[in-house]
Image (cartoon, rainbow, N blue to C red; front, side, top):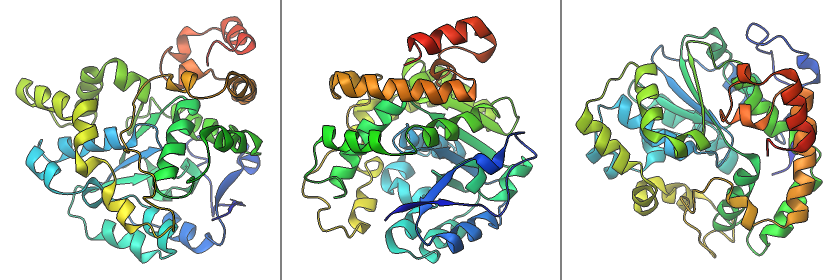
Length: 331
């Protein structure tokens, strides 16, 4: 489906003071009705949302959140596909063009509902902007994300027959690379100190999963004991996630009707490295991408280290930030 620029019914002006009129938002063609339904979506007080861009650690965090919200029911997690336990809001519409197949599974869930979305802040339900629901956001280095998206797209048929380098050249040729990616994360980064937002990164989860689990459990007010912590660490380990059929999106793959779906398979939990893009993309592709990434970061007054929580915003003074942007150190 072709992506086109869209205009939401309203903007979260109560949350972020910016020129929203110049914020370019993209979604699939003829999606106005679906986005209107999302904007007006009714929420329950105890709904929890996980918001990310694709392939940024969403599934990893999703599994952690579901377990915390369900008293560490590991047997339940292994018995049912993650997509059925915690639906992806846009999936039914993006695959079938049917809003009912997006909203129906969410409406059928028992509380507390855990809902996944890749939509940007301005396209999410306006009720979320009131700050009454918990939102967890996970960022990631955009180059790692795009490499992971390529392999996901091969399995689902969309990138079948296309090399990674061909795919990434197309990404680089896109007008919205990397603006949409960075602004999507930066808007939630600006809300990271709000009591209803938990902002983290794939890189932080790799660096200190135990610490992230502790922080999220406090955020959700779902305390865990030492035994549960050890079970969580094992269940959420790369080795366990990779061999777990309920977290490898096999249910979603079975729904996709693309003619090339499944012709070449890559596990959804594939590699899980930080900076793995460095040995998969061509050096000239990385250099070109970094230049464009730094340009957009500079316009937003932020560094990639900050968006990935590798350095706190308060720790970076203006001269240091300028030097990082100039030298490309944040990438």
